Length: 480
Image (tube, rainbow, N blue to C red; front, side, top):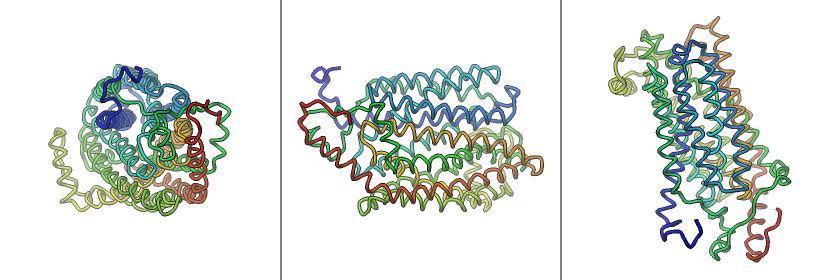
């Protein structure tokens, strides 16, 4: 649609708000789709006559393919129409998820989940590129905390939905996620596609004059992204951190095993484990505070965001260890009860049962501290890269993240399975998850190094944008 053909409200404050809400919802649903199968491991293994290890391998493969496809989507988005790509990519994962619900054999589920993964990569890289254009650097950490939090909430909703709807029939949860994704994809047709660099202070004069920022990425610029030192540390930290994060996908199963060890049946354990997994992630709300702290400290020193992330990651480790090993002693819920009844009983246990309460506090502490990672990482990726490079570099970083997460996801299941010969469930899962927390240590070091390199990289990006804004808007863009 040409500018003169658009209605007067197009691009206004209300339209931008609508766009952000749709984007946040899409990001939530993407992560909900990723969280469904891990929250239904036991029902899937029974229905399709397969093993936990096989389901773990499939989940790891889906994460890996999602991350790999994000690289291609990101580069394509930095060169072309981002809105069109986001719409079609969303349809791909919606169709893949819907067809996954029809699987009657494990190989069929695996195949359709790969289709889902290809589509899921689009919101990760192209969606990030668009969202970063809505946010000014001064509020980037706070705004990105909502972007990251929406993905965490999506994971919670997906896990909760899967554990409740999929406790007896795994296809119900997949159909529900596909239906929601299809609905939101229609709303996306009416969103606003912002000009690149819309909220960059150094480009404000350019946009105010009515000119567009016309620079686009090219293949010969790819080495430049790797040569930017902060990019290297942000990519490497994701590779290590996501091994630890990837292992956490098995937390619902850990708690389902704990509930079964307390004497409850499979259906009840699946539901209660899912409810506990959702409640334990409430600490993610503290990422908003962490993003705000990162913004404030960044105004004092251009190393601020990296410092906040390093402290949060390293500080979370002891809380995770407590969370894994605390037992669910004296757990009292109704065996075979429905979801509504179990939610009330689990919430009551979190207040009246000291073991459940202590587990809740440990989980909130761990998730709250790791919440410093996501918003400040998102903001740093934007800070140290030019607008036309952000989708691509995020795709590359997300690929590293996905590789690490896939490794953590797949290896945790294998390690816990091997440990089961010597350690009974759920202890084997607690020990297996603990082993993978060591990967948070190099993550802290990478953020320490990023704190040293980011000031120079941020200054360089600002200088380039300021120079471009001063150029004659009628002159052809350079190849930079």
